[in-house]
Image 1: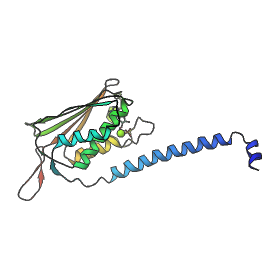
Image 2 (image 1 turned 135 degrees about the vertical axis):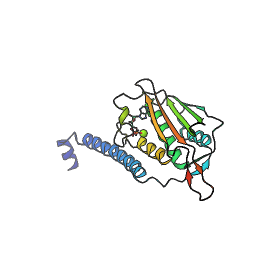
Image 3 (image 1 turned 30 degrees about the vertical axis):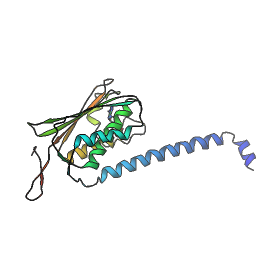
Image 4 (image 1 turned 90 degrees about the horizontal axis):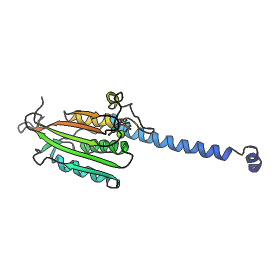
Amino acid sequence: MRKRFLENHPELPQIIEKGTATIIEEVDSLMNIIGEFSRFARLPETKLEPGDLNLKISNCTDFFNAHENVHFHLSLDENLPSMMFDKTLIRQVMINLFQNAIDSMGGAGNIWIKTSFDREKMLVRISIKDDGAGIREEDLPKIFDPTFSSKEHGTGLGLAIVEKIVFEHKGRIRCNSRPHQGAEFIIELPVLVKEDSDGKVSCGLN
Ligand SMILES: Nc1ncnc2c1ncn2[C@@H]1O[C@H](COP(=O)(O)OP(=O)(O)O)[C@@H](O)[C@H]1O
Ligand SMILES: [Mg+2]
């Protein structure tokens, strides 16, 4: 019966193969969306603790050690003050930004990371720059939208999560980019200080 059936429908195995491949692909993409969405919708509560931001940032590059053709260039300001930040969430910020940079360069290229301390404004500036494909002018205003992705299997949530975490730290993020000239993300984090008396956290910006 199977033989007769296949004789009448010779194209069937191919259809099944194509169909199941599509299903697998779609499931992968859905799993991605669900994973990122649940992280976005309910990020863990921000736990601010004093720490060494330079060290945190440089540790995050280890996550991408397997990408042999991606070169990280670190220029970390030694005079950065000890900061209050959430170690897990800041790690997520770095990973999302590094992953986007790597996506934009097709697996090979450079990522420059720079930290600096703006003593006057009492904030720390982190710049993450790549030499990837860059961003079209018309896309720039949309990149932080949780629905915007230019990738076939992108979720669009990566930068929305990044922005939300930066806001949780009372910081700001912006992007400078031109097509074919890479992208630079600049994060400004106020130097949050823990007040001694009641343990409340305040910052230099408000
Ligand atoms: N470093 C970058 N270089 C070029 N384009 C970028 C970069 N970072 C983000 N983008 C653009 O912003 C979009 C949104 O990024 P993101 O929110 O992380 O979602 P996703 O990575 O799932 O597409 C990307 O699809 C891409 O078009
Ligand atoms: Mg992303």
